[in-house]
Length: 199
Image (tube, rainbow, N blue to C red):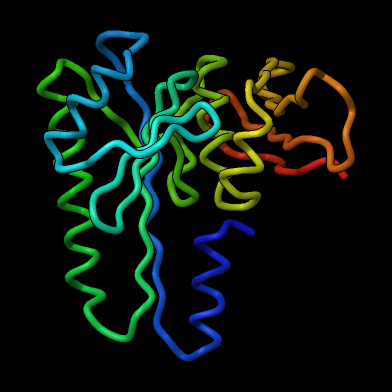
């Protein structure tokens, strides 16, 4: 279970209200192969400060909001949690304002961000291998945890009979207990057909 979800579960059991803000955004067009300096310059304008790099992901923080940039998939993940008895509305508004500020920074730099995947909006085609891997990461991380999925990079994706099959890889391709994450997503409409993890 992801650390943020575990913390919320503990506080919920203690009688506190808890919510998670989670967005997974991908660069939709514009320049490719963004450098860390370019991303850092954009997110600093949104009042984020750099933190130590974690498992190949660039990490930034603004108060209690974390932002990770994945250079392989060119995705941004914005995440925060609120686990106290009051002030939920103000926290939600701040998360949304911060997210819009980040997106605006990318727009000003000639790029556009789009939501990678939403469980309520499974209608967007998944035309490329990169898009399929983005969907897989967006689905896997809330289920299996950031650290576990980061350890399974790079991802692999193959298209068979109109369905993308995406899997993680094991370090050095040496079989390990626990296996890797797997996802099947339909190319035509982005519907996730199967999510699993090896044992």
